Length: 308
Image (cartoon, rainbow, N blue to C red):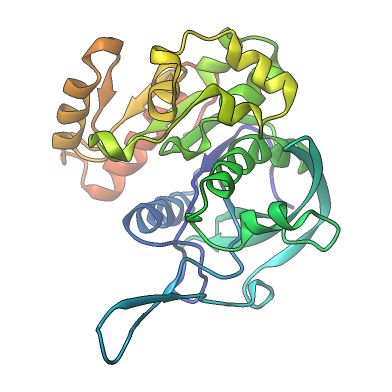
């Protein structure tokens, strides 16, 4: 039986676990998948959270006469790889109640330890078409759907963990796509002060256009009223919701994905007076031992969770 106590929940909009599962696009997903595979190999109490995309990212095709790239759906059958959980939940999107089902994929490590990875799915006939579309394609080209995906990952991920009975000690947000998890946790835990010790944030890009921004008005149209009310109480720079900045401001620990990347990101975030640590700093213990100790240090920071 799966142990649901003292878990780390790893949120990522894409997770690459096998090439046959169309749940990733590129580097971010491969890194997320490798992190979860490493956690399984090292026996760490982690579970993954992402979205299920019935049409994948896209399948590239070139037009024969012009060489222009064409993007086609990359359809696949999740039932060949995952099992459907018997529990569902509801989330509010655009003032509508949306039913969410949960798929589970078990990543088994070399020693037999299982890291369950959960994929949220709104592609159900009882849902409005616009809400179904959140689980059509990864990184939807439609801004309204893209925001819906990010709310589903962040808010829906928190609800899913509660629905499945997990006792989560740390929420690891892999990139800022899951930023809305902070608001869901504040609603669940009562205050921002209770949330911050539970958040770990990994940033992947120091490039300005890589950080998603929304106006409060745009978010208000999608987010549940009680969660938007919590966002209204925040001091938003230039009246803009910068998802990366929001994660940095509300995480007990933030890190980059390499030593150099951490250095560059710290320079980009000097006004926040925050520490962005490199994911890996020294190879003294050998890579497996180093990665295990690095992850343990990150996940134990600011909480009572103990990982041996």
